[in-house]
Length: 115
View 1 (cartoon, rainbow, N blue to C red):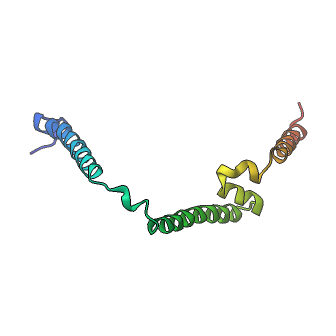
View 2 (tube, rainbow, N blue to C red; view 1 turned 180 degrees about the vertical axis):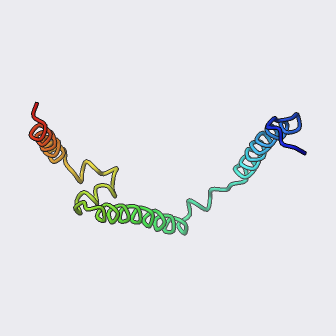
View 3 (tube, rainbow, N blue to C red; view 1 turned 30 degrees about the vertical axis):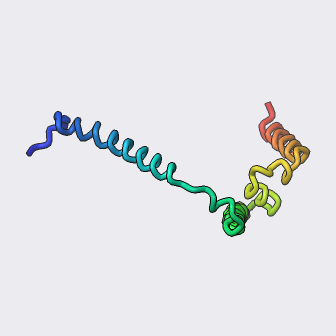
């Protein structure tokens, strides 16, 4: 069969039915597994330390990998740790330091580009 670059009726059925079927099956699997989920084991004391350990490992991994990557790019430790803890950015770099940096950048621009 030669390729003509056109989509026939059979091809159109496949293009439409495959995503619809996949979506329906995904929803059906999600609903049936969600209805059979028992959350009683999560509230028990045995799972909480494991959850805490996983949470701590994830946070520490993100924090230190970001800090090491920024340090490798030539930033100082303070800025590197600030990127690792982006939600805590305001605590790591207070606004007075940001203002000083912005003023220094503007004055540098004015000095190098006098109009």
